[in-house]
Image (cartoon, rainbow, N blue to C red; front, side):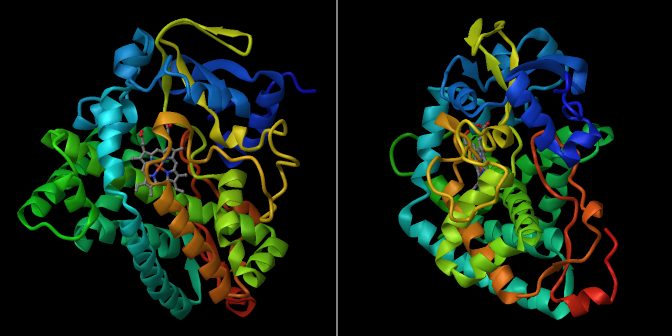
Length: 413
Ligand code: HEM
């Protein structure tokens, strides 16, 4: 047995293969103390399924880093979106403030609206597939997953398309692949808030049948402040773009690496929904939840965490915990039973899970159905993930619609 994880957490090698390191931690140091690379901050990562769920369900682990985080954490600039209105956004506030924002946001996700999104997603996917078919070789990340997630979200929120293009670049800067680009993060968050503010103003002036207008109108007397409203719209923009794009990319790669499972899906369209769940478990879009910080000294599976301690919850790790999932390394679209934590757990679980599931269940099978011979169009070891501790996303995923198209040569990654 190794006495160290194979690749240190959040090192370049870890990003390319986090599962080996996480498996070691799960077995040998399930509540593991290490130094977070940004600011060299003393941090703990939790990797077992039961511990992950326990942390996410326990109010002593706060999302309010600015309030409860220790001095070291705050000084390192790890308080999310510090200095923007998103510092008090839905994902980083505790009850009762969170309860109010969450109730209001959920009110706009009605069954009727989600059903309409299905049609929107189908239309976008069909059009984008036609585009990909014309090219024969394409990048799943930019030409398919990126277009699907951006197109669907843009239409749902009622965003103009040219705005949307700029937003994608702001999003990339807000979640950089390269630590040297950290300095661009605050201005990127600022631009996302500006877009959200602009959208709210536009929809206030000319309400439509879209999610932004629904959020503005609300359903009761409990009015949101302008900043709260803009914050929710910005959270939906941020939560709903890169995650869905990343997930579709990871899902397509997993199926390309398991052609038997891709064939199973092609032959059984009714497996679309369980497929999404298994792919989210197997290699989800978020490696970890956002930071939690302890509000008091807490005991977790035999480890004592001091008050103010930063805690990282390992979602990828929990989803491959053999204590919970039988043969977790196996991709099995027919798997049944325990729920994954790819959408988190507890009060902050994913607000957009219904939309993400719907997009996945339409976009993933459609790609494999449309291209029965879909193949990777680059050497296996050239497929790279971005260097990001929380987001698990491929840099690019070049594919060819058929083996013949692939023979014309691999694309540049
Ligand atoms: C496959 C795609 C997605 C994945 C894997 C994902 C994952 C997650 C996870 C793990 C959390 C919890 C984070 C934590 O506890 O710190 C979360 C929260 C959230 N997600 Fe998603 N998400 C996805 C898509 C979406 C979409 C499409 C939207 C918007 C429509 C969205 C909006 C949000 C928001 C607003 C929160 C914060 C909720 C709260 O704090 O109450 N997500 N998501």
